Amino acid sequence: MVTMNATEFWDGLHERRSAGTPKVNTRLAEIAGPLTPGTALDLGCGGGGDALWLAGRGWRVTAVDISGAAVRSLRTRGEPITALRVDLAEDFPGGTFDLVSALYFHTPFALDRARVLRTAANAVKPGGRLIVVDHGSAAPWSWDQDARFPTPLEVAAGLGLDPAEWSIDRADADEREATGPAGETATVVDHILVLRRAER
Image 1: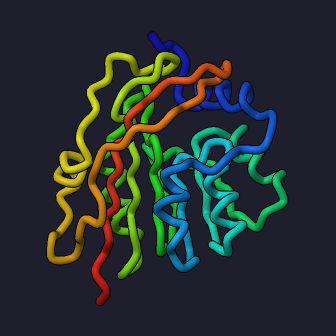
Image 2: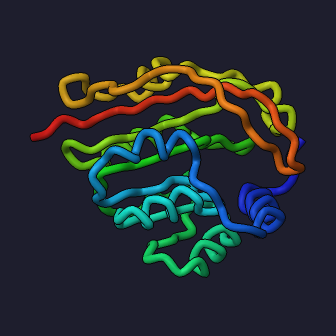
């Protein structure tokens, strides 16, 4: 039972994980690697591995997280990233982007996730992509052991986006080996959804 608020929870988690250089998520690298760099928005950036990877490849990155600890840590990394503390339950960064990523965008706190992702879709430029990668299974060290894991197509349907304006580039489940906070490993499932906005 979580008794602290969302900011306290995520600040505590990121303060414990602040050591070392954050790594890019495998899924982001495989999806965004072939893309031409442009503007990118990283929702729930955490330690900043994805934002740093994108910036290192020429993307102009805005990275947001509810955790001030995560944002402060990212700002010290020296890359030209706009790092902002934003509670997405209440606010959303301005601007439009060629790529918006929401990877493992889960929380034990109340959040209208579909609303946030619809807002994220509205921030995608014509021809751009929205990437949503969700847990498809619970790792042994995860806090969401009893969670239900919607399929990528269920997530897409829940967003209610106009099919004349949006197409699905990818909607699948894939396994990977994950490493936990204490160095333990387990095979987990990712649910991968890539939506592309039509050119105007």
